[in-house]
Amino acid sequence: MSSIHENLNAVKEQISEAAKAAGRSPNEINLLAVSKTFPPEDIREAHQWGQRMFGENYVQEGVQKIGDLKDLRADIEWHFIGPIQSNKSRDVAEHFDWVHSIDRLKIAQRLNDQRPDHLPPLNVCIQVNISGEESKSGIQPSEVLNLCSAIAHMPKLKLRGLMSIPEPTDNEAEQKESHRALFTIFRNLKENPEIQKLPVQLDTLSMGMSSDMTAAISEGSTMVRIGTAIFGKRTYL
Ligand SMILES: *Cc1c(COP(=O)(O)O)cnc(C)c1O
Image (cartoon, protein in one colour):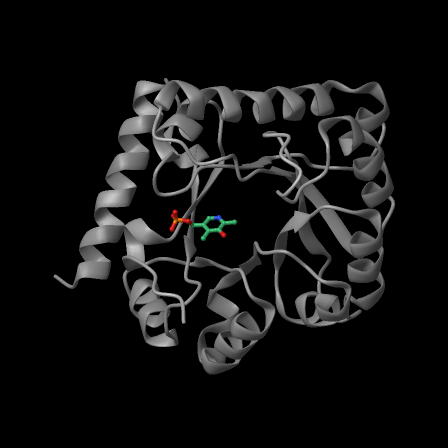
């Protein structure tokens, strides 16, 4: 067995265990393989073992790999999960199937305007800053409702849910606390009468990475974004 194959199996096992421990079905949790910094061959290999959803953080790198793996395009769902600068939004709108990292109205508007007509609406999640640090991206919880309402009216965007990148910690209780905070915002949003009037299908809570997936699943994650545990340690140039 290759290490990517073994790692994928181990991650799926961990997801399954975490789901069972939380009284949830493993089928409720999607696995997004975060392939940033890893070559197209590694993605091809993970695909060969059944993986279909891949996440990239850097626009240029992602677009390059989507091109390199054109033969698999219809069989892979590409998710953009990194920070989006205005001047890169067109590439995201034209090449990806999902964006998890919308953190301002202007970017949502640009993606909506730039999404080509021949493609289905871009699936989007709003990135929420739950740690409250100045430096981290993501909107404040108090702004979630307004941004959601605005996006719900954009024809080329399909609002799917929320995403967060909590401050890293090894303490499982702290991990759970952050994830619970996002879950609560998500639940309140779904129960909001204004939102219930809108034609949206809020089904995605994108939270949990290699080191906190168990805590995230116990707090309601529907999509974990896993890099290191599948592809190994990243080296940045
Ligand atoms: C890199 C990255 C991940 C994956 O992190 P690992 O710790 O390697 O699993 C998940 N989400 C985002 C937004 C990332 O940038």
